[in-house]
Length: 147
Picture 1: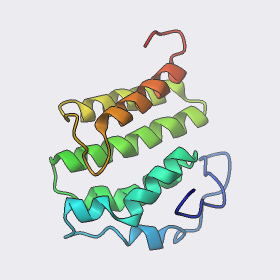
Picture 2 (picture 1 turned 60 degrees about the vertical axis):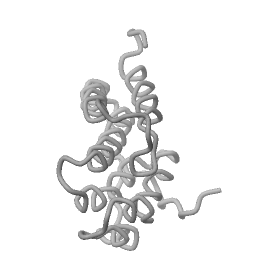
Picture 3 (picture 1 turned 90 degrees about the horizontal axis):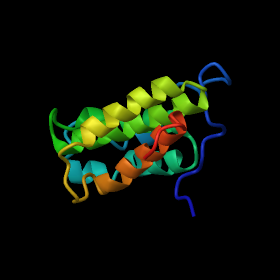
Picture 4 (picture 1 turned 90 degrees about the vertical axis):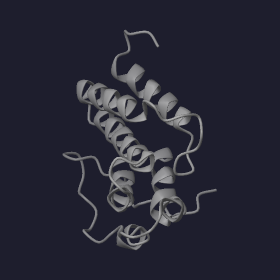
């Protein structure tokens, strides 16, 4: 069961209208500068983003994850993990938009961001799960290529 109400629609640029500018402010404001990584990992912004991603709300996931990413220290494993999640959502959105080459480029970016992150959870998420998700996106973007 979803903890967060799904958005009214999944925004796809060029296909349907954007959400109101303040549509995700309540979630976004749960991640603020000065919060530590553990607190950010428990924020509604971070957790809702995963529900949005799972529900096919790729643009929306990016929107709520951005303040989490911005609040983390540069170069930290946590910031890399959040950026990888954002770019994975972007790759999925590009597939929705019929842009498989752009999706494949974003998948490569995610794989590079995840490189070197070990098997332990980062921001409460197993990097192996995100690697597998991105592999599936890459296979959809390049159906003729093997795993």
